[in-house]
Image (cartoon, rainbow, N blue to C red; front, side, top):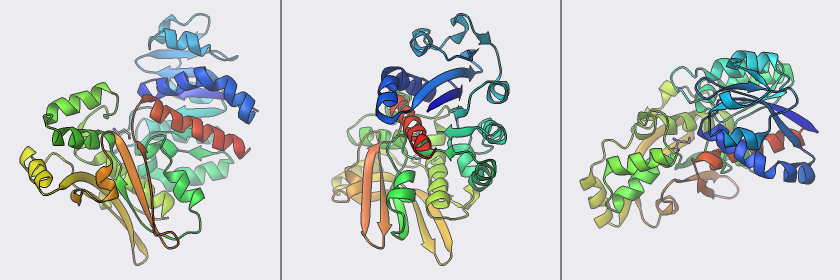
Length: 339
Ligand code: HSE
């Protein structure tokens, strides 16, 4: 089976996805019978290219983000034209997250689904703000809407809750859901100043476009809403969640915790309370013996508190170029398996 991808956004994640595809596309075809071609890429800064018969991905990557030099193709189509007027049958939406408006991703995803195109995104804003609307729209249109990379990048989280743990009875989910803040806290414990750790996280491609989204807890909040609504069937709104980031923590707080054999982690949590699902994001001082306390650097971790297995914890990278790019590959393979 052949899939034609229209890639909307060509930043860190989009480039990571194309890199993996360029390297492993032949293997995916052989192993899974899944042939993937990228026919269009549209980005307001890097430029836009469209070739009905598919773009040469090695050539795209050689251009190092300047698509204007790509030869012999249609150029300059904006995101909506790329979604609606190309021959792409799967739209991969990877523009930067906006947790307040969801835009431009929300408009892109609505347009893709309305045009009967399968849609994959790693963009948290639209899923946190409009999951039930978008899920209903994809169902009505008979296409897939997948977004594994919105929580913990390529480390499986949503699929685990929805598929592997289906039927188990999930009472609570808690975890380290933001890589940047975990990277900062881990480095501060080792004596690196806050601002140095933050700029390193930015350089490594972990941080959001505006780092406030990470350090004030907005990114973790979006993931809490997604987990609560998608995995626990809640009806959480962004404004329902109590949120505290890591900017109130001082070097002294971190040193004191260390001297007590403890450490601070930014913990996102969803739980059932009566008929409702509730959520919160806050720094918590954990004992070093706590599994989550042992998760350092950009790693994330998620613990499902369940009826049948008690606690199930998964840990892995929660941000990064190929780490998030891989989430799109895994969504594509799952989409393919459902055809
Ligand atoms: N800025 C996010 C993080 C990226 O640091 O976890 C992945 O959502």
